[in-house]
Image (tube, rainbow, N blue to C red):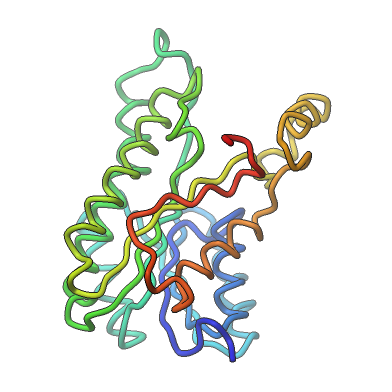
Length: 248
Protein backbone atom coordinates (compact mmCIF):
# COMPACT_ATOMS: atom_id res chain seq x y z
CA UNK A 1 0.00 0.00 0.00
CA UNK A 2 1.36 3.40 -0.97
CA UNK A 3 1.50 5.90 1.89
CA UNK A 4 -0.41 8.70 0.12
CA UNK A 5 -2.78 6.60 -2.00
CA UNK A 6 -5.87 8.60 -3.02
CA UNK A 7 -4.78 11.84 -1.34
CA UNK A 8 -4.61 15.16 -3.18
CA UNK A 9 -1.54 17.31 -2.55
CA UNK A 10 -0.64 20.85 -3.58
CA UNK A 11 3.07 21.74 -3.66
CA UNK A 12 4.05 25.36 -4.31
CA UNK A 13 7.28 26.22 -6.12
CA UNK A 14 7.76 22.74 -7.56
CA UNK A 15 9.45 23.29 -10.92
CA UNK A 16 12.94 22.54 -9.54
CA UNK A 17 15.01 21.65 -6.48
CA UNK A 18 13.31 20.50 -3.29
CA UNK A 19 9.80 21.25 -4.54
CA UNK A 20 10.27 19.08 -7.61
CA UNK A 21 11.53 16.19 -5.46
CA UNK A 22 8.52 16.51 -3.15
CA UNK A 23 6.10 16.38 -6.09
CA UNK A 24 7.82 13.30 -7.53
CA UNK A 25 7.96 11.47 -4.18
CA UNK A 26 4.28 12.25 -3.59
CA UNK A 27 3.32 10.82 -6.98
CA UNK A 28 5.43 7.71 -6.30
CA UNK A 29 3.48 7.24 -3.06
CA UNK A 30 0.13 7.44 -4.86
CA UNK A 31 -0.91 11.06 -4.33
CA UNK A 32 -2.59 13.11 -7.01
CA UNK A 33 -0.39 16.19 -7.31
CA UNK A 34 -1.18 19.81 -8.08
CA UNK A 35 1.82 22.11 -8.11
CA UNK A 36 2.73 25.70 -8.89
CA UNK A 37 5.50 27.35 -10.81
CA UNK A 38 6.09 31.02 -11.58
CA UNK A 39 8.62 31.57 -14.34
CA UNK A 40 9.82 28.07 -15.27
CA UNK A 41 7.00 27.21 -17.69
CA UNK A 42 8.86 24.50 -19.63
CA UNK A 43 10.09 22.84 -16.44
CA UNK A 44 6.53 22.95 -15.09
CA UNK A 45 5.13 21.24 -18.19
CA UNK A 46 7.87 18.60 -18.10
CA UNK A 47 7.14 17.85 -14.43
CA UNK A 48 3.42 17.50 -15.12
CA UNK A 49 4.16 14.84 -17.76
CA UNK A 50 6.66 13.07 -15.48
CA UNK A 51 4.15 12.87 -12.61
CA UNK A 52 1.30 11.70 -14.84
CA UNK A 53 3.55 8.90 -16.13
CA UNK A 54 3.55 7.50 -12.58
CA UNK A 55 -0.17 6.77 -12.88
CA UNK A 56 -1.56 9.65 -10.84
CA UNK A 57 -3.48 12.79 -11.74
CA UNK A 58 -1.14 15.77 -12.02
CA UNK A 59 -1.58 19.40 -13.01
CA UNK A 60 0.70 22.43 -12.88
CA UNK A 61 -0.62 25.93 -12.21
CA UNK A 62 1.21 29.16 -13.04
CA UNK A 63 0.54 31.11 -9.88
CA UNK A 64 2.17 33.58 -7.49
CA UNK A 65 1.31 32.48 -3.95
CA UNK A 66 2.50 35.81 -2.49
CA UNK A 67 -0.57 37.46 -4.06
CA UNK A 68 -3.69 36.63 -2.02
CA UNK A 69 -6.15 36.80 -4.93
CA UNK A 70 -3.96 34.42 -6.97
CA UNK A 71 -3.56 32.07 -3.99
CA UNK A 72 -7.30 31.98 -3.38
CA UNK A 73 -7.98 31.27 -7.08
CA UNK A 74 -5.30 28.57 -7.03
CA UNK A 75 -6.88 26.74 -4.09
CA UNK A 76 -10.35 26.98 -5.66
CA UNK A 77 -9.01 25.73 -9.01
CA UNK A 78 -7.24 22.78 -7.36
CA UNK A 79 -10.38 21.75 -5.45
CA UNK A 80 -12.50 22.08 -8.63
CA UNK A 81 -10.00 19.99 -10.59
CA UNK A 82 -9.20 17.31 -8.00
CA UNK A 83 -12.26 17.33 -5.73
CA UNK A 84 -10.36 17.65 -2.46
CA UNK A 85 -7.20 19.00 -0.86
CA UNK A 86 -5.57 16.75 1.72
CA UNK A 87 -1.97 18.02 1.85
CA UNK A 88 -0.70 21.56 1.36
CA UNK A 89 3.07 22.00 1.05
CA UNK A 90 4.25 25.61 1.13
CA UNK A 91 7.66 25.29 -0.51
CA UNK A 92 7.91 28.44 -2.68
CA UNK A 93 10.71 30.72 -1.49
CA UNK A 94 13.48 33.08 -2.52
CA UNK A 95 16.65 34.61 -1.11
CA UNK A 96 17.97 38.13 -1.60
CA UNK A 97 21.07 38.00 0.58
CA UNK A 98 23.04 41.02 1.70
CA UNK A 99 24.22 42.58 4.94
CA UNK A 100 21.59 44.53 6.85
CA UNK A 101 23.45 47.82 6.27
CA UNK A 102 23.10 47.35 2.51
CA UNK A 103 19.67 45.71 2.46
CA UNK A 104 17.00 47.74 0.70
CA UNK A 105 13.38 47.99 1.79
CA UNK A 106 12.47 46.27 -1.47
CA UNK A 107 14.75 43.30 -0.68
CA UNK A 108 13.19 42.98 2.76
CA UNK A 109 9.59 43.23 1.52
CA UNK A 110 10.09 40.84 -1.41
CA UNK A 111 11.53 38.02 0.74
CA UNK A 112 8.89 38.46 3.47
CA UNK A 113 6.09 38.45 0.88
CA UNK A 114 7.26 35.44 -1.13
CA UNK A 115 8.38 33.31 1.82
CA UNK A 116 6.04 34.23 4.68
CA UNK A 117 2.96 35.96 3.30
CA UNK A 118 2.50 33.17 0.75
CA UNK A 119 2.06 30.70 3.63
CA UNK A 120 -0.68 32.88 5.14
CA UNK A 121 -2.36 33.22 1.74
CA UNK A 122 -2.52 29.53 0.82
CA UNK A 123 -3.34 28.27 4.33
CA UNK A 124 -6.12 30.83 4.78
CA UNK A 125 -7.56 29.92 1.38
CA UNK A 126 -7.34 26.16 2.03
CA UNK A 127 -8.77 26.20 5.56
CA UNK A 128 -12.45 26.18 4.52
CA UNK A 129 -12.04 23.00 2.45
CA UNK A 130 -9.97 21.22 5.10
CA UNK A 131 -12.46 22.16 7.83
CA UNK A 132 -15.28 20.77 5.68
CA UNK A 133 -13.32 17.52 5.25
CA UNK A 134 -12.39 17.52 8.98
CA UNK A 135 -8.87 16.56 7.88
CA UNK A 136 -5.74 17.94 6.29
CA UNK A 137 -1.98 18.18 6.64
CA UNK A 138 -0.27 21.54 6.23
CA UNK A 139 3.51 21.44 5.74
CA UNK A 140 5.40 24.74 5.67
CA UNK A 141 9.03 24.84 4.57
CA UNK A 142 11.17 26.80 7.01
CA UNK A 143 14.98 26.52 7.37
CA UNK A 144 17.70 26.01 9.96
CA UNK A 145 18.39 29.72 9.29
CA UNK A 146 14.95 30.47 10.75
CA UNK A 147 16.05 28.73 13.96
CA UNK A 148 19.61 30.04 14.39
CA UNK A 149 19.83 33.09 12.09
CA UNK A 150 22.59 33.79 9.59
CA UNK A 151 24.72 36.83 8.78
CA UNK A 152 23.68 38.39 5.49
CA UNK A 153 20.24 36.79 5.62
CA UNK A 154 18.24 38.96 8.02
CA UNK A 155 15.27 39.06 5.64
CA UNK A 156 15.36 35.33 4.90
CA UNK A 157 15.87 34.37 8.57
CA UNK A 158 12.98 36.61 9.65
CA UNK A 159 10.68 35.10 7.03
CA UNK A 160 11.60 31.53 7.98
CA UNK A 161 11.33 32.22 11.74
CA UNK A 162 7.92 33.77 11.05
CA UNK A 163 6.86 30.55 9.33
CA UNK A 164 7.63 28.61 12.52
CA UNK A 165 5.43 30.89 14.65
CA UNK A 166 2.69 30.80 12.03
CA UNK A 167 2.83 26.98 11.76
CA UNK A 168 2.52 26.51 15.52
CA UNK A 169 -0.39 28.97 15.75
CA UNK A 170 -2.25 27.21 12.93
CA UNK A 171 -1.73 23.87 14.71
CA UNK A 172 -3.36 25.30 17.84
CA UNK A 173 -6.27 26.88 15.96
CA UNK A 174 -7.16 24.02 13.63
CA UNK A 175 -6.23 20.91 15.58
CA UNK A 176 -9.77 20.43 16.89
CA UNK A 177 -10.96 20.21 13.26
CA UNK A 178 -8.60 17.33 12.48
CA UNK A 179 -6.11 19.54 10.64
CA UNK A 180 -2.40 19.17 11.35
CA UNK A 181 0.24 21.85 10.78
CA UNK A 182 3.98 21.18 10.82
CA UNK A 183 7.16 22.74 9.47
CA UNK A 184 10.28 21.22 7.95
CA UNK A 185 13.64 22.94 8.47
CA UNK A 186 16.17 21.80 5.85
CA UNK A 187 19.86 22.36 6.49
CA UNK A 188 22.46 22.40 3.71
CA UNK A 189 20.69 20.72 0.80
CA UNK A 190 22.63 20.26 -2.43
CA UNK A 191 20.56 21.43 -5.41
CA UNK A 192 21.09 23.22 -8.73
CA UNK A 193 21.76 26.38 -6.72
CA UNK A 194 24.69 24.91 -4.76
CA UNK A 195 26.21 23.20 -7.83
CA UNK A 196 27.63 26.52 -9.05
CA UNK A 197 29.43 27.30 -5.76
CA UNK A 198 33.15 26.86 -5.13
CA UNK A 199 33.76 23.11 -4.47
CA UNK A 200 36.19 23.84 -1.59
CA UNK A 201 33.60 25.99 0.17
CA UNK A 202 30.95 23.32 -0.27
CA UNK A 203 33.30 20.66 1.14
CA UNK A 204 33.99 22.86 4.18
CA UNK A 205 30.25 23.00 4.82
CA UNK A 206 29.95 19.21 4.46
CA UNK A 207 32.79 18.67 6.91
CA UNK A 208 31.02 20.77 9.54
CA UNK A 209 27.91 18.54 9.42
CA UNK A 210 27.90 15.51 11.77
CA UNK A 211 26.75 13.17 8.97
CA UNK A 212 29.60 14.57 6.79
CA UNK A 213 27.49 15.20 3.72
CA UNK A 214 25.07 17.70 2.30
CA UNK A 215 21.44 16.71 2.18
CA UNK A 216 19.67 15.58 -0.98
CA UNK A 217 16.33 17.07 -2.07
CA UNK A 218 14.95 13.54 -1.62
CA UNK A 219 15.83 13.67 2.08
CA UNK A 220 13.45 16.59 2.50
CA UNK A 221 10.85 14.98 0.23
CA UNK A 222 10.83 11.82 2.38
CA UNK A 223 10.12 13.94 5.48
CA UNK A 224 7.25 15.53 3.54
CA UNK A 225 5.84 12.09 2.72
CA UNK A 226 5.89 11.18 6.42
CA UNK A 227 4.17 14.41 7.52
CA UNK A 228 1.62 14.17 4.73
CA UNK A 229 0.74 10.56 5.49
CA UNK A 230 -1.37 8.97 8.22
CA UNK A 231 1.87 7.71 9.80
CA UNK A 232 2.18 11.16 11.42
CA UNK A 233 -1.48 11.42 12.43
CA UNK A 234 -0.61 12.43 16.03
CA UNK A 235 2.10 14.93 15.11
CA UNK A 236 1.23 18.63 14.86
CA UNK A 237 2.84 21.97 15.68
CA UNK A 238 6.35 20.56 15.23
CA UNK A 239 9.49 21.66 13.39
CA UNK A 240 11.29 18.69 11.84
CA UNK A 241 14.96 19.47 11.17
CA UNK A 242 16.37 17.71 8.11
CA UNK A 243 19.94 18.88 8.56
CA UNK A 244 22.26 15.93 9.16
CA UNK A 245 22.65 16.96 12.79
CA UNK A 246 23.86 20.49 11.92
CA UNK A 247 21.95 22.18 14.76
CA UNK A 248 22.29 19.40 17.29
